Length: 124
Image (cartoon, rainbow, N blue to C red; front, side, top):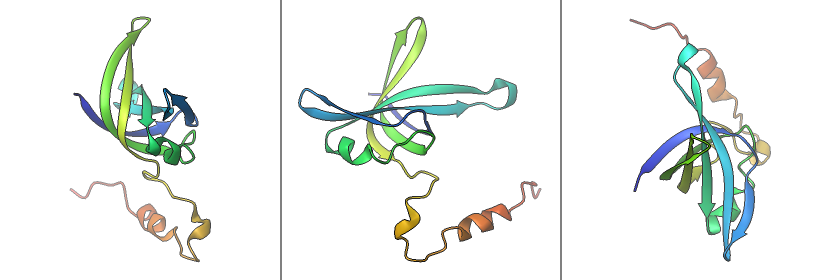
């Protein structure tokens, strides 16, 4: 079994379907690779099966950042590699914020302000 872990941006809202009596949630994730002129994007088709599929579908929306761990399967379509992942774990709140309407007055922006004050200059 090939195991993979990656983070990226969701390319489309998650879709919930029923396959042979089991729920399955599918969505695409774009993962950036390289920098500058050598930058490329790899697309992964992610499938979440069973009861987790129903719970994750409402949280995975286009443009959101997710972390995915699962089994990697590589196929080919029209001469191009196709990456499919049967996800074991999906974190739909990776690097983002959950719905803040229930946070009872807590200031969720404080950590962001501290991060903004950090310099990109290398100290050495």
